[in-house]
Length: 339
Ligand code: NAD
Ligand code: UFG
Image (cartoon, rainbow, N blue to C red; front, top):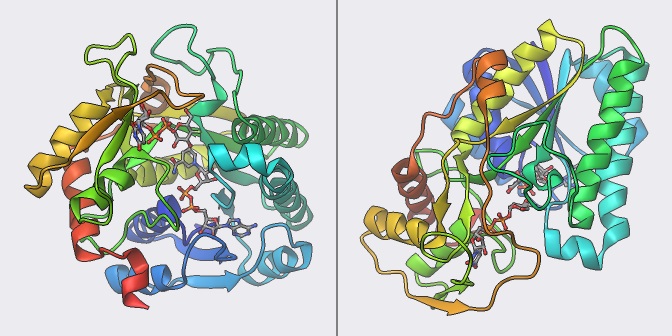
């Protein structure tokens, strides 16, 4: 299949490129490098020895999209391109609505003009909001607590209406839980441009000495060790979920959400210990106050993805920690060290 991957140079996109190419798909990336470097694609090519097309451009740009549709003629699109920082989304709401919503609209318009009917979308478990019960299944009510989360839910609704409007269309909405880890080679990984917002990249930067200590955001939650519980999903498992979703989209019409998690959750201290084991280094921690907006626990019921797409996570906590360490120790300055 010919697959257009928007945001393919990013963290999750880059790992997905490798899985797509390994399955024989023909792939072309569209990225504006607002949160990535073209160096990523050089590494993907080296790891795959494969042909990979790429176009530098913005997903909101209709003429770039029309040219791509005409030249590459994708059978399907995987739409990663977007802004993703919860805190920043409160400070820059219009930027988030513009990139995440106008970007999705521009893409669907171009697909409609070109007769491209299948799309896989990067959604997030954050669309559920405060849990009414756990594990979340896909019928759990949605109530996102941030601008970012609202853009994801709105985009899901737009995709659902688009898919319903014409019979052959299909949209697969992947609600990711907490993506972590890296390619086992240590050549691809997550490269935050600023102080990391997320737990694993922060721990990894403490391990290589770039930061002094991990601030643990609260140890007074109603959880076994008092710290937040999350359903961490290895990025390679997540990448494979996109390959399964493409196959599902070929066989189905309409829109359908799927949780992508492991069904197991870990605390902040579980993650620290796993990383200490993988790296052989001590991670100093300091407990601070809770981070506003954090929930005590998240957990996926991923049985729908298993039953309907034949997808299941295969990597465990040790794989997550070991691959993150492989990436961080080989690239202490991320892709920057290589450019
Ligand atoms: P990322 O920032 O590493 O990747 C996003 C990519 O999109 C980057 O390469 C960036 O340069 C590109 N991009 C951004 N705006 C663009 C635009 N206007 N035009 C073209 N390209 C553009 O992020 P990621 O972690 O790989 O996340 C990918 C997707 O998954 C995002 O939509 C994100 O919201 C979603 N998601 C991520 C997480 C997570 O924790 N990483 C969780 C749930 C959902
Ligand atoms: N944490 C710390 N210290 C840190 C960073 C995180 O203690 O420096 C804790 C958090 O309080 C939380 C856990 O580690 O308990 C995981 O935090 P992350 O920031 O890694 O992940 P979140 O679950 O907060 O964020 C994820 C996704 C977002 C999504 C959000 C909504 O990364 O895309 O869930 O729940 F919007």
